[in-house]
Image 1 (cartoon, rainbow, N blue to C red):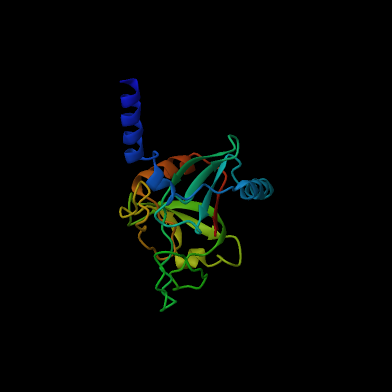
Image 2: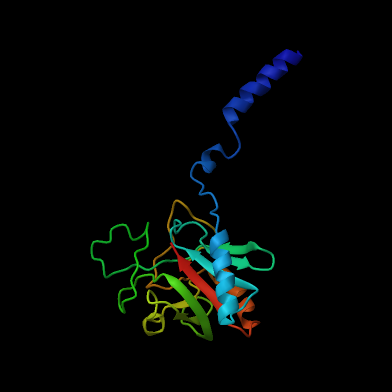
Length: 203
């Protein structure tokens, strides 16, 4: 009887398969951002930015996955993350892969994402999402037109709270827009800080 039960259990397990066997193949493994975190902290100390946390946005990650990260310098870990948009980059008429991969430009009217470090500035009214936006000041040649382009941190109801891979996040005009609920979290954090917070878009 024991042998029969064992055979039945083995057969059942072979039908079920290994837990998450289907999902692990498509799941993107977390990256090692250790060097980015170190560079970000050194930058924040030098420029007198907030030294508690910063925002890292990795545009090399599929837009249906979490790629907007809140990194806590003191805890030395990512404490929160969310899906975020990238720019439609209309300047490239043949941009057929715009949903899959971001293209970059600092040009006004390009609707592209711009790489580089940003200072998160003044809290202001937005017509999108929870009606709050933060001005983003580009600190490098690659994103120096951010204010003129009105590339800001804001929420958008169309951005999901959770990963939707293999589906995509909606496209923006260059803003790293997040979900309404995530923006509420960011807003609470940003309102408490007297020093500017660093937002760094990488690929």
